[in-house]
Length: 288
Image: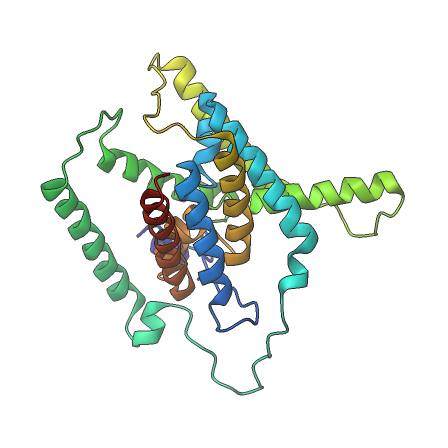
């Protein structure tokens, strides 16, 4: 509803996310493959490109290790990902373009589709509260936490005209790495330095987390499932690299993209959870 409000009141355009096409096997190949990797990284780390910044703010050891792996993933993506991409045929002039959203695909009004999606989300939430009660300790009612996350979307749109998204910060960090490397070796190109606004956003998440744990007086919870250093770094690398192949992460596709009813974001989120579940089951079967 916030996305619809922002669009109708001229706050931000909020365009739906386009497919991440890499020329491998389908229009959504980048979304699918990238988010399978992202989900695998989430299963290894118990984190995502956004929550790793929260964990860094908390001061968790694994959070810093996941961040290190994510930065490495950003360096590898910005330096070598172009080698993996195959030419994607451009649409012929006058050719009908594929629908980007669910409501375009179904031929219904946006508001009708959004209200239907909203009702489906509420149904899932109510079913989870009824049949899957939370047995773990929690600091905040999940409904309140979700509303706060939605509110942060509105704040982002008002202040920056951009929807929420974190994983681009790792790609920008990678571009900065290669830019500095070229500068030091005397091979710097004339390209401008990358915009670091996404890095500042990620840093803001870490700062907000640090401030909460510092001033609220709430003890930092200790995970019952510690993440080894190897899993943390590898998982962080997979998350960053995969999310950039997919053109978004749990926030970019899951929170923002799904809110626009983008088909590519729906495919991404399904692949994300599919990859995480598959790896979790595989590791459990192998005794890990």
